[in-house]
Length: 621
Ligand code: SER
Image (tube, rainbow, N blue to C red; front, top):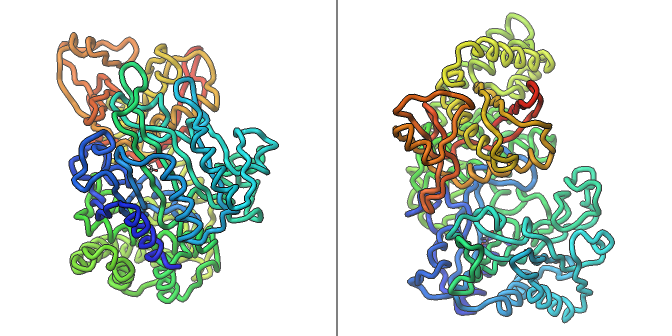
């Protein structure tokens, strides 16, 4: 079954159940400054879930174009993509669990003919405030039982039950949905609710325990081993966070979201997302262009996946008005295009591939998204121009490479210099060199890399201005990430955490703070999670110059023991929609304008500096 047919079946099915099918909103959110891109189907629906009347009524369905920039670096494995379509249906104060769950079951098992024996579901197990969702679990149980399937309900992590269960209760980390995550992270005014998710079982043979994040546990539907894949999420959105905790919204909503590509992978019963028709068409084209075969080596597979995902996403982004640049959305698009161009070089293809790759995407999607057809010329031009710009840099590097390799075999140090000057990744130099029968030393490359890092550390340690090595775009992103990290540390470890110093280069941020003991793994993970959730929410960063009194009154924090002038510069990182202030610090800047451009935050090391002072080294990826 083709992806287009699944999309069509879904929309027609919900149309038959009284829904109005609306077109996808733009990837560039309208009237929503909180985020750079539309990343889910429900994002454009928030006002209506809160009670504003939708012009098309109380039953809406669509297939929403979605883009998640935080997944760029993950692309290359068999399941991550930056662009995807999210099928959605909404009850805006209309039907609820007793309709939604049987409809979904019917859609999956009758319309898509998925074997119900290979579908598993999860429900919310409740917390101190909100009850366990037994109603959903019982509806599911009845549906499975009617198909003669044993439908035991199990509380995760009831170890022995994991093998025989069908319906699993999980806590709020897995089965509560709000844009901000778990209930305690939700700002006042944010809607949310328990959810019930559906999973497809690709088969026991895929239970790759050694790769599982839960390797000491029995495999279960939410583990990452690759056996199970979430194919849809029914959110029963009936709560709102208030000053006093949780209250019922004035209406009970259903917010269903299901990744179209994931459903197609389940229907095709192949966990490799790139085998579905809409992506395979590009992979096939890349095979023809390069003369290589998908699957012939891990590198080739990875490069083809990167190009297929990034070019598809770029076509949709340009069609929605995004142009490559060094800022915000344009910067993300530029990264996608440059990454795919490097991957294309590594595949060894010299041909003029842009118009054909773009045409392949447009041809695949123009029936569902006619605007792509109308924008073909502009999309091709924008992508072509960016390719030409970047090609010039790549070409210069290639010339240098040829010069060196004609004089002597490329060494690890040469590879590092090519990386440093022209942005050549290690793999690119290695593969060029291998063709010429040369074998640069990877260890030497890594050693040079490290030497450079150490050098930049020592040379800049003495004369950092405000802790920053320079004001380059990367350093500025690290700087804002450091503010978020300080806030997260105070939230996780307590208000006795104070900054003692910082030192930020283009490779990492180093942050010293007061705290009496080693941080636990859980504490580090929580700090990372908090910082990444703020990055994901694409908060606004604002500078103001105020009196010292006012800054103190507003609770600004700064370097421990530092003296400040009467007029001070402060930076606020806040959610412009709710005005929730996440971070407020005395600081001279500079900072990014939106946290969404920072990248993914990761703590590399936490260690002692002296008694009562700890040091974190963290990177953004
Ligand atoms: N809001 C849910 C999600 O985005 C379902 O649409 O996953």
